[in-house]
Image (tube, rainbow, N blue to C red; front, side):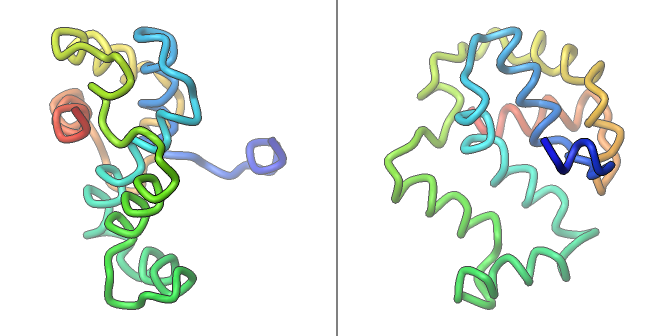
Length: 125
């Protein structure tokens, strides 16, 4: 909570996570496991340098932060797909629309519209 109180913006992974929790009852920790890798891939073109720092922190420079995050999720035995969390494909449009109302979507490093959020959900499904 200190980050939020200090003005740290969260971006699409967090914003979509709110919609997944509200619309599909998905636990918030799982939303990060599932959405962070696709959002990292989407944002890579605008924040590759920051993501490279993540890869270095993992001790694997040259491996994408998205792949490292997905690998960590798998290694921990946590769900990595929306369908693994009980989200139904027919819910994706509703979840995308709900996410567009979250305050963190506009703070994503790379702008997102409804079609972009829907594509991220499809990738995570």
